[in-house]
Length: 184
Image (cartoon, rainbow, N blue to C red; front, top):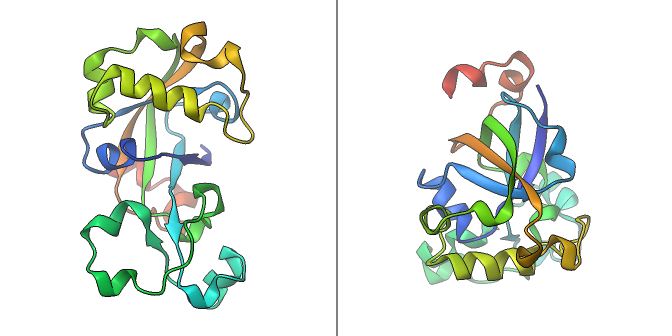
């Protein structure tokens, strides 16, 4: 059993946390080695207090800083957003600050264009064309293969990951003993 990071951008993040999205499509790559029972810890965009802007997120964690997640900002009062730093990339989120795990039920390889309108909506998009635009913009993220061969029109084979969401971090001792499997 392994634990790996996964970045989920809005609007899919909200759909995952509200349990309307139970499937993710991902380019083949770092998640290709995942198997049923493996866990993905969710990374997401965040901000830190302006007072710790000049240091790394790990240093801010050591100093007791608390992140404000970008997905939560619309629901927060103005005073909670005062004096926040710039938006940080999800890949910068220290594992200690993550707030959800995905437990993989199944993982398979499918053609990207097999996605339906209903699946696009379940993933938090208003339409399949909106998903396509987000996919084409996202496949050029650092560390991922990019280029025309991975865009929607090329219909690449992608990973279809079906999961159960645990909307809280799994305590470290449970990660070591596998207790989280009983929660799923």
